[in-house]
Length: 145
Image (cartoon, rainbow, N blue to C red; front, side, top):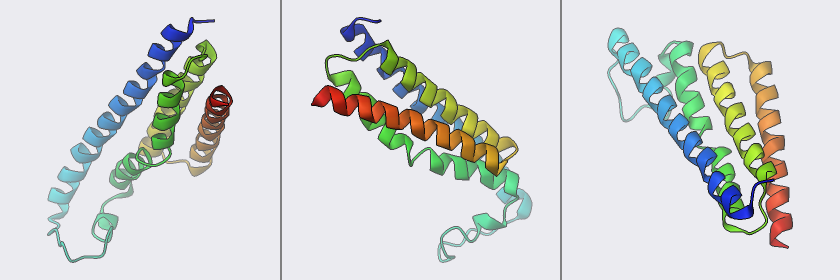
């Protein structure tokens, strides 16, 4: 068991790691999207319905953008819960391990979605990461009672 103060500080490392990974996906998205737009000679139309033009790009290009968007969804809950855990007394190495597990599952989810996009595997990874986040949420809630 890690002393509470050290566990609190260690809980911030997975938060920063996931933010860093989000920037990796952001870079990968633009590194594939911009050349694809140029190759297709797409004329960007601000009046086109949301997502219509990007749907014309190859799936392998869209997958990176889809994943980047996914990193703006449920992980925001992770950030909130991890910060609550980092701020309250009583967190342990279990909380740190759960946080790192969540981050690893989200990185693997990103790689699966961006490289092969096997939906069943993505769903399994999403389900597992959701259960880890649920465990973190319950632990945070119990510490606040």
